[in-house]
Length: 136
Image (cartoon, rainbow, N blue to C red; front, side, top):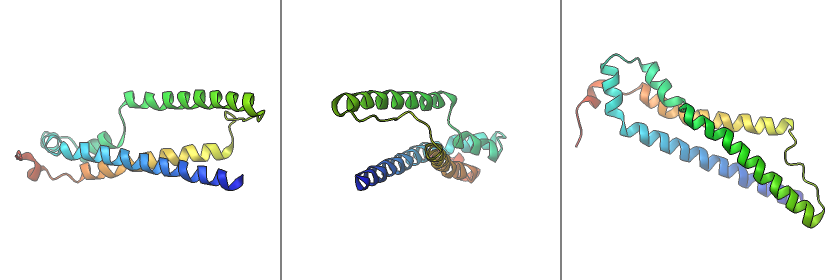
């Protein structure tokens, strides 16, 4: 049974990596489409760090989805645990907190921050003169 747990853990980490890559690609493409907007903001006096911060931190509305995601996660796990207990008699303590869960959550948050940092560095290095002219 230990090998099956290990396989599920590897699949879970692959899902995290794919989600991180997807988030990086989404933010990077969005930033790439707004190069001219960044150049205009820089020409109007916005500092590089201001623009970098704009791209490295998510908007407050998207932060609420993280809490909702954890709530949905907890509800699904509680439902699955009750079904498993009813059908097999095995008790799963899915909502019990342990140190490894905290470490995994911290690592996932760090991966999300790293995914936002790469587009932020690209925004930091945006050349004003090159991107002010419209491209067709």
